[in-house]
Length: 474
Image (cartoon, rainbow, N blue to C red; front, top):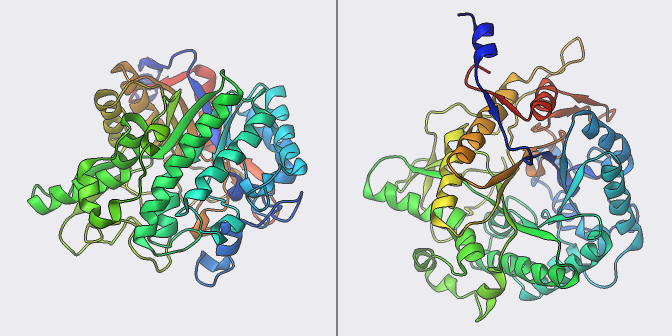
């Protein structure tokens, strides 16, 4: 039997008819126009101007100019058949200093974007925070300050009041682990602080901000669907030694269970608090009840697996930046990260779709039932535009296909998985890596801003059209 015959005869992996097919971006990575429309300064605007923070000293002042090109970008989304588009709102575009009334010009941009999406039959999914804290709030203490959580709830209410009549699906804080530990412990991300104890307060206050925002939004409308958004990893010990097993427990605790237990069980894991010792006194009475309000969905960002060891010799962390940094693993700084022998992406991240299956089935098995959505999944590769103008990115296609097969297997196993968003729609500013790492389904020439859908985008469009994909022969 030929490969083509096998492909034709392979059984189709058909997803539920109401399964959500989308792609995702974030405001700071794509919008540009950092001084337009009354936008204030964010911590990332400040961070990128500090020497040594970002590769080649690059910044997102222009990024991919989505602020001015959003209509063309929405047209491109429609041509790819996207059913949904997950994007974030820039907090300093709405409240330049993080407080006070909404900046009407900033809100108008998102109103126009939502209207454009709806006109093209694309469901808007709004994320309220993707790491661009107004600099004025950082100057007042940032996320380690409890007051920032209250200010976030005010901001959430402003955006929800303006868009809630047209946007049904919302998420609050994207990847609080990154915002807290890369921002305040390792210093790899803005604001670039290395204060482990303060990072724990930041993590707690990001979760509290989520809970307060949920309260504020539900007070305005009862039909809004709201979810928390966490980045989860499958965790493996390098060996079966006591030290490596303890390392896996520790990293799973701080990366996964700290956030999942708070959101879904209303408590922090006892072993994580024990690991933290005197740094564990960040919660006040009643906070966890606010954090653990019932969710309409849980959004999951998944990229890779961690293999860890309790013995020195590996990397100090799975680095989010190539720049000098501390450890983000508060209370477990001794843990080292090693390669598990799997293929890697251009980020050096191991490719392991089985880890996604582990995570989804674990959530289904160990936590209260809640609809799940894959809100980010994708990979960076060294894409090159060929002489004929196309981008042959078979590695990305294969990555997404493997993870979609895993999603289908999880659904078949009873996991309430309801949607998938590829990361990212377009190449963009990749935080401390600058413009050197390309995650997009769509190639962007940063000099001309020309967009070219890669082969993976065309394949994904066909997958959406079919409502599924072939089996292993694909």
